[in-house]
Length: 290
Image (cartoon, rainbow, N blue to C red; front, top):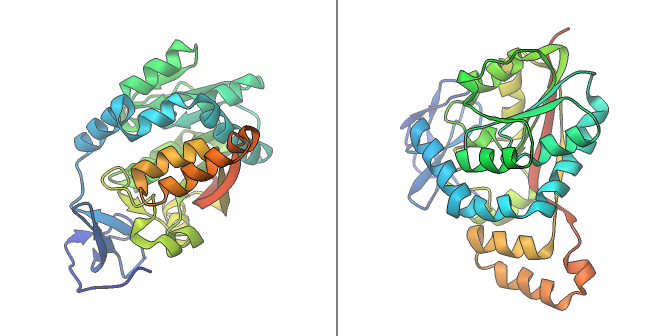
């Protein structure tokens, strides 16, 4: 359970510009501060944009995202699950996946004949995507100049990593055609998993994850960028027991032996099955005005 401590007031909220004046807890050398005005939670001190990019690239090379990048079946399973949730809402036209990683979602959309491409800042991830023949560009959002409007812009597991998410999401919204759909996922600190695990929740992962949202704060972010028809729903990640145990080794070591032991005693077909796990994420969709 998160509990308030002495007000600190050392950071300005990126969402509402008020002081983030409530310290929730400290983890791995960072304070987690909540804005008492809007509820956005942010780590302090805030990393710089260059530090975020450097850490992101290192993570793909030999850090915690290296396992994700190499787990092809897991990545494709997650991409397929997300595509199945977004595609029924999508208008006709081109798709862009921002924060495309090694291109699993681009591959999923392309496989059914959609005009799909991706955007990613990690050199390592882009090289892997391009080696598979996928259209994934290495560029920051602020530098990208699209040659068309998109029917769908997606940003999965991304917004929580951003130093300043408001102008970032606003720029992505400008790439949408009228009535175009934006779809993003973020960890939800109001979720059951977050409330039960408290500071041990695996999504509390500084400095990779900078901002932490609730349905109210992510809804406010999209409204600030003039998107409308905002819809929020739980998002479940299909993960195998083996992969879950490996990730828990990074984020929640005390639980890793339990899940790993379960994976060893289960029949292989069950241990290797991708279970849709409620780990505390939400899918948010919104549209550009027609």
